[in-house]
Amino acid sequence: MFAKDLSFIGWDEVKRRQLDRLSLVPQWIELTNLSAGMTVMDIGPGPGVFTRKYATVVGKRGKVYSIEKSPLALEFLQNEVKNVDNVDVRLADAEHGLVDVPQPDVVFVTDVLHHTDSPRDVLENIFGLVHSTSKVLIAEYDPEGDGKTGPPLEHRLDAKHFIKWATDVGFSVESTSTQDYEHYYLLLRRTKL
Ligand SMILES: C[S@@+](CC[C@H](N)C(=O)[O-])C[C@H]1O[C@@H](n2cnc3c(N)ncnc32)[C@H](O)[C@@H]1O
Image (cartoon, rainbow, N blue to C red; front, top):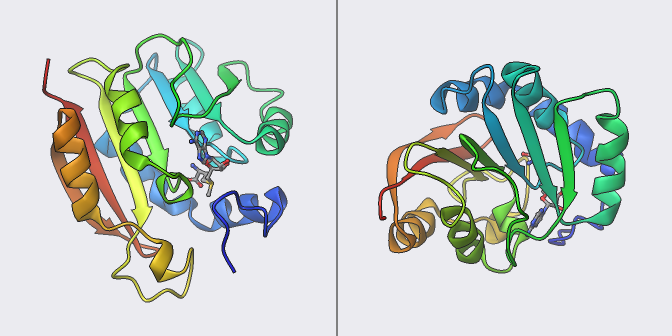
């Protein structure tokens, strides 16, 4: 069973699934050159296991803005990061616009876009926010995977669609590859002025 709003599982279970996939994060951090002092936008953080990792890397001089559309996920997340000073949690739907935050150095959108109705709109909204040196990291479940973990194959989005949407919007694809846990990533940079 699958529903885009994750109503078929609780946020504790979403957290457990994030912990299972934690080993994907170091490569995302390396690909985006995430480092101390940077500003991150984490779109669709869910329970925030990965958010906390990004917060540790950017440190006290950096900041993570977490943009979450589900009020229940937001409540869960706020509790998870209540002792983390450099995470700012906002309730917003990235399909309909991004809240007023400083230009991010890095945007993470991991395992979010197959939960949205229009991934292209999210990409457009990110495009409007980033500068030409910002890195945008998208990660998704691969429809070519074996379907043993994650959303059913028919709910997954092909990387080819993202490449088309991203380039239409004005990004270039700096790199893309498959990863463990039936994942692939796309690293985007804004090239159109
Ligand atoms: C499966 S969780 C992924 C969490 C985390 N990014 C990860 O990689 O594990 C998807 C999260 O994205 C949120 N989400 C879905 N659509 C969104 C949107 N349009 N704007 C902001 N958050 C969204 C959901 O509410 C949920 O918390």
